[in-house]
Picture 1 (tube, rainbow, N blue to C red):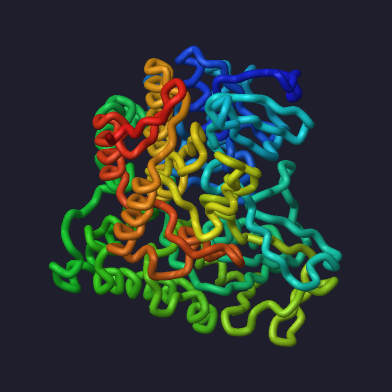
Picture 2: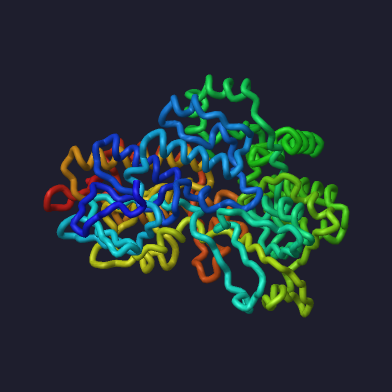
Length: 548
């Protein structure tokens, strides 16, 4: 379709979806299957969401390809051939475009369009959506499918505006790519994008200097090509695999070793860790024992193992000491998986600067100054991640009943019921919103579950003649408390991470995702079975509480 398909201010849609990533595309597909008139607004020039924006060198998914895919159509599952165990960004984007074309989604996708505001009209039960092309549309259902990792976190550094070289952000990488040949490059940030891009930049640049504030745990991805036999074997059991992952805490097949780490000898723990490190790698590593995310003593044993591995790989003892986390908790930040990250620090052209005690003072016209020392560079790469979970939601001026601002309501942290809706904002749905498993699961499975739940809910509203749905305040309060109570049973809240918003200066520190996909699914099914318990439904003129 034309990127600027004509829409008048009087146009009326059944549903407006924001975001053309995997969530937005599937949501559109489901809405059209129900015969609803829907439109998707996307600020980028193409589909793919996170995988449209994340084009930095080395960008790769940390969930296995055969599971990081749609499951709503077996024909799609059977026809697509993933080339590697963990897919690189170009392959995932190719898949997203294939889906958009296969299901003819593009006529209802409007690209290069940013949603500026959304305002609810309580008397008409409608949302008015204003976009940056100067137009506005009305809709009965407003669905935010903006993803959890879609808004770049761009920290402010003194002097950055005066830097004469090039500046890049891994979360907003130039589509034409970047050539670092002959350049001195600084990389700031050692989360997943920093860890994935470091080996690639080092292989090209004259010199790479990594500025590290917090050392990170990372395990080998052990990525490899997939044979036709492997793909066919998985395709033959896709139904069984999908059913199995729906019953798992992380919505994926981690091959969990259902044994506590502290119930076996130190020798047996090492044997299992070595096997996981060498044969599995990736996020599977943390399934070596069933208590690594719940028992701090058990977690300490896996931390010691990884630190030992870092010292064994990095030849320079000073670099190894900086790179190895001290008293760290494995998994409280998302565990990174890499291909040759620690080995990269053995290269002669790679330097490491510890800024944990002496932060970056300023960025000068020609480099970076730390503790009075100037590091001359031609390019700066900020691998500083995202304003996760809430950044995209709060980037839109969303105003609900009585003009209440979502930004104001969430000033002390996001509040939702089931990560699906929030009190005071009727008919606003969030796909994998805060308070749902989202980033603590295989996102494709969480998207599948949430889109189907929203679709089924809308079908119920349509058939019952209900014009509004929103949570009860008591249900929302109880859910927020429950999310935090469950998190407190784990090691997740024990360190500063983007799960809590700690990577964004000034953002309230609140644990946002729900731990346990399988228990979450059971809760959702229970709520629906009880007639949408905990929600307020508005049928033609009066309010009723579903749980009454």
